[in-house]
Image (cartoon, rainbow, N blue to C red; front, side, top):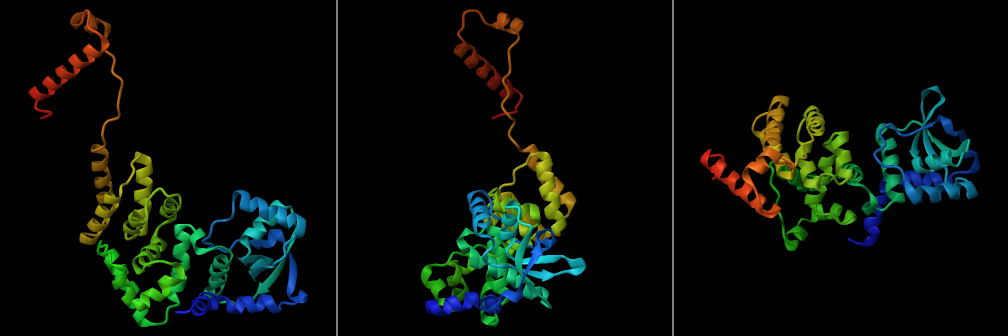
Length: 324
């Protein structure tokens, strides 16, 4: 596959967008009050922070907004941002009152979402995106695959994940899967990785945040994603309230339990209760009373006292059959 073909495949979803911008005359651009602009209702990307945001604010202060914002008109005179969320955010910090906009009308929900996703991908490299942002991009690309063969290849990976199976293939075997290779080459990902990222779209917001914050790994997130939304929320809330930290083996166990028998809150609660009971006791510094010390010890050093106490405890628990 040539580089030209790959580039064409990535950008074809926004050709209509680029053409509109390239041929836009001054009369097509309107200055709209910034307080009338609203973020896209399902905007899946994080806004710039830190130096990147600071640099954008300074640039806007010096040069204004060079590329117009793309918006979609809503009812009651408001506008929903399709492209330019970061520029609008920076413009607010730069105290701009109006921003140049291109107004799009009569867009379907699919077209509007394409603007949002593809323009973000054009402004950032795929590798820069957070895991759940990559998941959104791959979902859009996956849904646009027209070949049934390509869908089947990826569907096999999704089915393996659902069955709790991770299959590692060698490089030669992967290269034979031309259909999966086509989409994988665009983002330098294997078919298995694409399937895992796609599963992140089924996570609730709290678990998505946990993935992006690197609190849980990708495979652990995949296992959690198969639980019903209600159970995902309940699991997250209970773990926070109990101070429990799920391990990958816990997420896998809950996933497999759900496959065998529809998981419910009671079953989740029982599992977490067992986790709580199996938690090792936190270390506590125990002091020996003055009377006990005087009764059993005379000239022993601190180290000798500690050894004697440890041996006495071992003898006590052996006799009571609490330790082997």
